[in-house]
Every structure is written in C-alpha cells, then in structure tokens.
Image 1 (cartoon, rainbow, N blue to C red):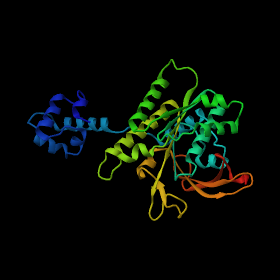
Image 2 (cartoon, one colour; image 1 turned 180 degrees about the vertical axis):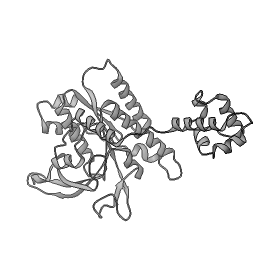
Image 3 (spheres, one colour; image 1 turned 30 degrees about the horizontal axis):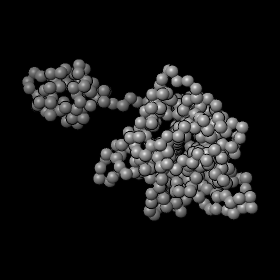
Image 4 (cartoon, one colour; image 1 turned 90 degrees about the vertical axis):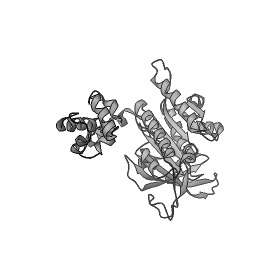
Length: 336
C-alpha cells in the first residue's frame, strides 16, 4: 500500500518528506525501516514530532492490517451457510458422510488419475441436485471438449425418466480452453446473478472439468507469475461461491509423489494432486479418487474405487470409503 493512498490520515507533506529523505513510499517501507527515532534523524528538522510520527505509523499499520475474526463467529457463520444451503447426496451414503455432504457455499477439489471416477462423481452429484431442486440450474465448464451429452442423458434417465428432458435443459455447458475464456464465462455468470431482472432457475452449481490444463502450463519453479494467476483465479471462485451460495467442484489431475503421498492413508499412493501443494489450501475439501479393480459380473462389469479426504475444513483428513461404478452410475459397495 502506497502511503499517498492514506492521505489525509497522514499529512501529504510528511508523505513527501518520507519519500525524499528516507526512500519510504509504502506501508512496508515505513513499518520495517527501523525505529521512529531512526526516521526522525533523517527527516528535515521540524517536519514532524516523534510522538506524531509514532501515531501516524500506528495509523498506517491499522490500515494495512487484515481484520481479525473470532473462531466462534466463523463457526456460527459456517453453520448458518449450511442451514441456508442444504447438502446434496451423491447417491453413495458413505461418500456423503466422508465429506460432510456435498453442497453449501464450498469449493471442492476432486483429484485422481484417469479412470478414477472424477467426472462420474461430479456429474452424478450435479444431476442429483437438479432432480431435487427444480428452481436451480448448473454450469459445466468443459476445458477439453470431452463432455458427453449422450452419457449425461443416459445418467439422467437412470434416475428419473419422466423429468429427464427438463433436467437436461437446466444443465448449461460452456467451453473454455484457456484461463481467459473461463474468466469471461465466470464474469458473464456474475453479471447475470447480480442482475435484479434475472428470472427462472439460477445457477447453484459449477463444475470445472478440468482445471489442470488451464493453470499447469503457467506454473514454474523459477517464476511466481503462474502461482499468482492460480491464486487470483481460485480467489474468484471462492468469492462466487460465498456471494451467490454456489457449490463449485474443480476436477484436477495428478503428478508423481516420491516415494509416496504423505497426505494419503495408504503407503501405496504414489501420485498426488497436480498444481502444487499450495493448491490444496485454496479449496474447502480435497477429495482423492482411485480405482482399485475391475470386476466381471453376469449383469455387467463394474469397478471398485476408493475415495479419500486429503484435507477438509469440515471433515477429518485421511479418512476413506469405497464405492462402485457400473455403467457410469456410482453406488455403495455394500450393495455387492
């Protein structure tokens, strides 16, 4: 923060003198320059008194500080959010309990290798939400062009043939092959949701499938620009979720974890979510999926998967459950 931006809290003449005599232009320069006495010695005689300089320094520190929040207030606010936005079932009781329910103004990260069930889980949760709430719609942002309208229609008909067409009408699909394009989609959504003239079902669910190709090319070990881009984008998603009561699911790829992933409850997990360790802390829950095995069956083959919470604001980490996928539909392994 430049000191010129806090005038007239501190005199413009003092700001100019600090810049000219001490090279102090920002709050960081002032707060970490040294003692107030060190600064007074370098200023022209009579510019400011020691007591006034200390007072102005405290004012700058107050302007630059992040406001504090009590833990009980945050907990109460979270509880009110969950009461306002009921949780949505994915159709697998064990998985619902694992993450504390899907829904609310939260950002979920779903990571895992190809074939682990990431897209299937996100699609089933969205369809379950649309079936339960006829006044809502969902936005699916496809970054690879792999969204299958045919598989989606089959899944909707599996749960409710009678209303399948109406549900599909409330599932909006947008293409976004770069970060700028996705920003444009989100800005158009923000403007629409902010408009008092908006009528009909409103977007209450967003799926980004997947976030990895949008951000990974910009990340570098020798430059912070890509990380800043990722932070800005995720902050925007969180603001959307909090402001409009939207649940957001971002699907992420994987990278190697040698010798194994320490966030996992299993030593056999040798992969980890892509986009670096800091990305996990930009979401409310990181859910890791993996395929255990394929099982032949007279009624049709199916696969058994493991879902594990790596980190969550509302659920325990390193907890897990199993589920099965048959013909693209998730169900409990207790049905076996």
